[in-house]
Image (cartoon, rainbow, N blue to C red; front, top):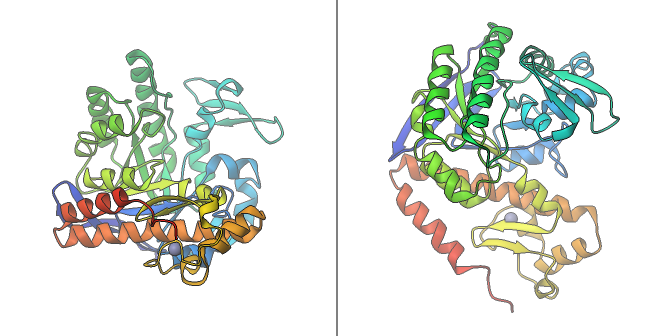
Length: 376
Ligand SMILES: [Zn+2]
């Protein structure tokens, strides 16, 4: 029996919302943070460890997987969930964003984009239809429309042209996606930082009708203040009864600010990437484990954190294995960072449900303002 997917809003506090997306592969509690599993793995983490941090859903990258090992091969091997041993929901991006960042290696037309692989220089084409086919072959639970987005700053004409092309592609994506019970298709709002273009885009997407709506084209270099200004109106332009997904965000304070403004889902490589470069995120802010101040420090990264890195290891050990370039360094810090991000999401879900989001936010900023514990 195929179970359909749905979204239920459980509570709101100001514009912040908490709820749940139900899918045949499990429930996604919102607001949700999605770790990024670019090449069918969240780097340095076993899938069961990712699940242990509290993640309900992962993000997979169409662009990377279509090039290597290819969507057709993953399909023959039973789909992405089985291939990477992750049985909970997976959201896949459309490949659009990564192809756009290839700059001079791509060619954009009304039909789609042709580009050269960064791996071997081979030629490929991505269109709305091909992106839907790849995401179907992968077995993605939440499929994203194929879209185009300019890097900011860009002039208004460029932003408008790009947004309108993305809306035509959104319609083609919906047609190509077809009727697939149990799978969701999300439209992507574009329009840069311009309120009128964002409204035009939202209107076009609502007319087509999607299972969820992403806010695209932010976190592309505009800075936090400009992003928050846009988020003061963008989520409210989208349907209230569907999930809203802010793509590619972000640092912990970006996430708290986005949830405050009505965002339900986010993804970012930051916690895993930082983990591999010796950067830890804690409730007291960012900790650089490379710093010599940690080399004799027997205390954990965060005494209140229940992740394996904090429960079992000292700052001195984390410092040592980073300096010695041991693999466990990236493993432990990634685990800690993902654990911290998921704990932050749980804290926000609880606070919204209790009508205490403002107090939560004040505490979040106060703890960060204190900074890391002083050296011994
Ligand atoms: Zn920890």
